[in-house]
Image 1 (tube, rainbow, N blue to C red):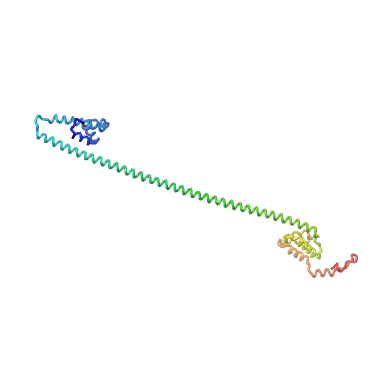
Image 2: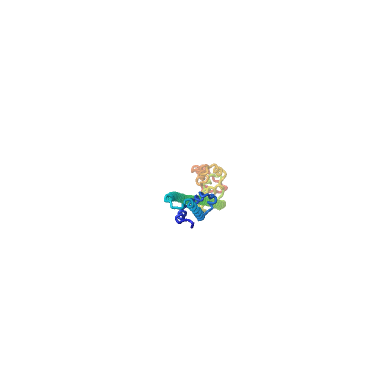
Length: 290
């Protein structure tokens, strides 16, 4: 570089790397050799080539004496060359600026796309998280509803089971109570009441004695009919078996049905009284027969 005039050095420094490589290629250098050179090496090689070119040009155009025409041509050539180089430099500057602007624009578009993709990805993640949270809440709600149904069903089953057990317990208690009462009152009647006579006239006194015993023992109404059945005569028991269930369970209705069956009425008692006769052997009195 020191071999060149300052103006030539400035010209080379203003050239781009591509311009310097092109100068070396024009000077006959190989493309492979030029590609491997750094900028400093490019400047050095171009400076050396330029210095050699100036020396050769000086040796061709130098004349023993000053020639104004030749000098004028040289100056014109130099001006044209400078103008051409200025145009080339401007083109190179415009090209480099356009290239830089294109790179900047491309980079801005890439950054913009990256930002949009980042926002889109973030939105997708947010929506996915919201869907997952909603699905979790829905599943949790469904599980809670199912658990409440199971709990209600279990509670209902326990209530029904307890109610069933309570009913069975009450039935057992009632059955045991009824059985025990039947046995208790049955034994009392067995020891206090004689079997119903086949004589219809004595039926009234039979029922009277039974009812007095019922009253003294405070026998429940629902047990009266069942307790008296074993003490009925064959004809009365046969009648009871033909009665409806409602009548057979009701002591008063059953008694009235038996009295109707045996046709016990005031006229019948009067006829029986009129047909009675005294038996001397037994020394019966009228008061006794009455």
